[in-house]
View 1 (cartoon, helix red, strand yellow):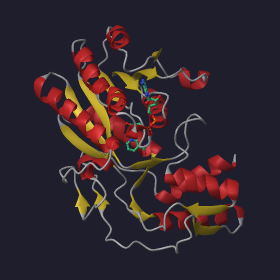
View 2 (cartoon, helix red, strand yellow):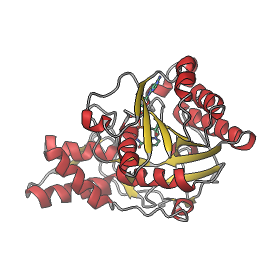
View 3 (cartoon, helix red, strand yellow):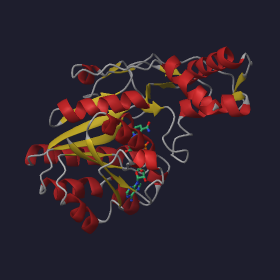
View 4 (tube, protein in one colour):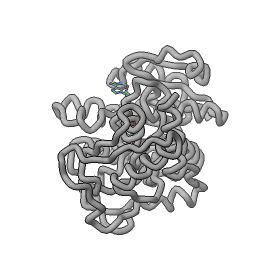
Length: 312
Ligand SMILES: NC(=O)c1ccc[n+]([C@@H]2O[C@H](COP(=O)([O-])OP(=O)(O)OC[C@H]3O[C@@H](n4cnc5c(N)ncnc54)[C@H](O)[C@@H]3O)[C@@H](O)[C@H]2O)c1
């Protein structure tokens, strides 16, 4: 399958491109603001384009290559998405429409859009399936939901099969050291353990999260490209929930196993560390599992590999 990945140089994109290429896909990548200077990574691509996704003339030229599928990963992050609405939507929303408009006229068959579980808001309860009520609580979630709706429109009104993936919280070593990923909580805690010899939490440790390793995200993308159904939404999640304190304790234990050094866990704000105060919810991934997805990384396995990576 001939695939174009947007956001190819990003944290998730760089891993997906490498994986899809290893799996025999014909991968091209759209990078911005530059193409990473890494010959090994570059060798997995048919073509690499340096392109601002807001530049429709450039997109039209790229579309002449006739891609069968697009994996669309361009978005500003949570903080950047709080900027001016005109700018934020010009990156997070309008390109989804432009890509579908332009590439659907050039043979596109499948469009895989990366969204987020943030579209459900904060107060999650019980089993969260893909039809759980939407409750966007910030511009990052809102713009992802707007793009999801553009996909739905094209899924209904064009020949392109549009699939939405709502990702939970990915983690794991980046392909490039400058990838925007060290603030992600698992990555942050593993790096603090190794570099600072302590873990300082930004909260009291009680918030609950679903963490999924980058390699499992890659497996999910392959499955969704091959088997994802038109106008279906799929969670890419591990299906397991941990509190931030439980995560920190796992990082602490793995670090001790490896180095025999004890490290402390404290709270940045001086609060007492807390166990979860709310009932555990679950980001249900059974829709993806029915297509053959099975996560390979437990949180312990992922932390072990990440700590090994940071120690190197
Ligand atoms: N990482 C996670 O855990 C996570 C969780 C949920 C959803 N997501 C979503 O997955 C997608 C990928 O996330 P990521 O973690 O790789 O983020 P990232 O910030 O590393 O990647 C975003 C990519 O968009 C590119 N980009 C930004 N502006 C651009 C422009 N004007 N033109 C072209 N490219 C531009 C960046 O260069 C980068 O390659 C995003 O949509 C993100 O919201 C990620």
